[in-house]
Image (cartoon, rainbow over the protein chains, first blue to last red):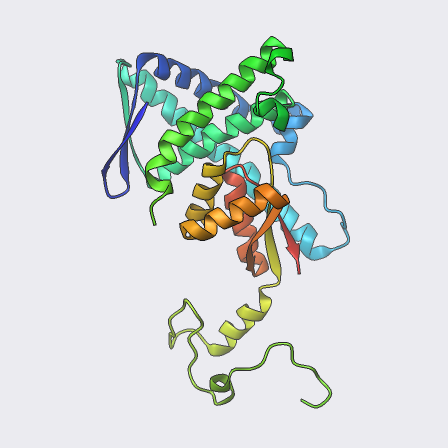
Length: 171
Length: 117
């Protein structure tokens, strides 16, 4: 995958055929996740989208903020579903995927990065991956599905790095 | 005011009723001085970012720069504080602004809370 700046706050992403297929699979899984009712998700994944219970529910300010943030968080799932469906539609319509090219403005790029990171964080929660797993100290002892999840997390991390790379060390 | 210890000294210019430009802002005749002072004193909510094992260091720096408009030096400093000390206070704002910041940072997947000071 390459991320080429086109000018002020516009980029062209280019994916090889295998990268396109990988990405389309990830996006389909994300779409499925965003579509699901929150109550139907495993508890670990529900927690990702819910605001934690307030330590002091009698504190009206904190409780008020918790409710507002919970609402905004639910809306974000719906917004991300629309975005991911747009990506999948673009993939279908492109037909040719070697390469698959997509042009994005800054807001679209940030949304894309955040969605890829959602997938990383959701996988980590689903497979209970902790720091020592991520640092690959225990990969050999891992089950196959946890190892695959870790690979996916690392590949998505690489894609994110390619996307933010040109901007991160600019003033 | 006798008997009351003032925590923050009132600048001379405010005492004299002169227009005041807070650092990083421009004085505007449309914004009442009283509102500016109120907002300054209402910044009683801290936004705290907590460490987690999945988010990449460079990614966290990028998010701080994007959401909090930090320069690279500050963004990196806060990222290292999160990594080494487990948390960093990245903003002190009004409740409403803190809620918005928390929402945006969470939208990028960071582990964030807000606390009243």
